[in-house]
Length: 364
Image (cartoon, rainbow, N blue to C red):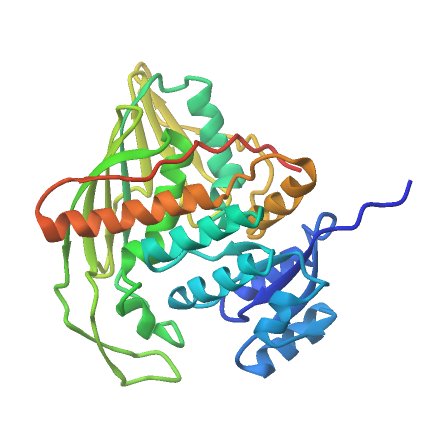
């Protein structure tokens, strides 16, 4: 029997995050997928990827999207550009996997999903960290009842922004940026994986620092006008009945807050950093005096970015739903906007979208 052809991936955007995608898709995930083409507005970046990872083709963006040698578009452009690339991909009959967030605006993401459905192609969205050993160990512990019925959750992401280290930090402070849209997808996706979809949110969003000065190279000394809230606090009412809180901030120098904790009727689960794939995972049950570290029960402890698009690729031939899917990515986008909307209106936002809690993952 002839070997089945591996799904072929074309990458649009060779920026900071592309290195780990290229490494993993041509390395640990190469048994299942192959990268056949790359493109970037800066040709030298695409050429370097071509040289470093042996990618067969360097193409212009539209040529890559229309290429017969590409089945899936990996869209790792900047957030404001996600929509244009994703829409062109699904119109061309290609599956697409976007870096987070799915699109900058709800209506953009809705159009991408509508066209994808009409053209019978799949949409996926980052993050895929919830598929790693840490997130899936937590999922198993919850599903197995280690802390009883989950009743509440907390999530915290707080630092002092990107202008002191990132080579091009301006977009983090422009429309479509900010801590919720930058890091919220990791935290909210982890929570949806553990607790299911969110039905209602409220929030408060502030911009305490109106200008930022870049201290990293090559833009050292450049002043940024901040256009988005940089400290956001939200309350999440899950469809399951659990209540959650989330704080994301670019205004905090240091803190002692946990990444994520889930509180149940019989104990507490401490979830590792949702921007990583590994642990540690801790549980403290109500009769116990001390926290217990739980050995990781699943694969992919290291940086395994690319799991989501690989799962999408395999799901095509296996005719099943993929886990880091467009439905969930859109739900997370809707929730993030909803928290900002609730702050602006001074009232709750009833989340219009929902999603199916993704199936557990134990490896390919």
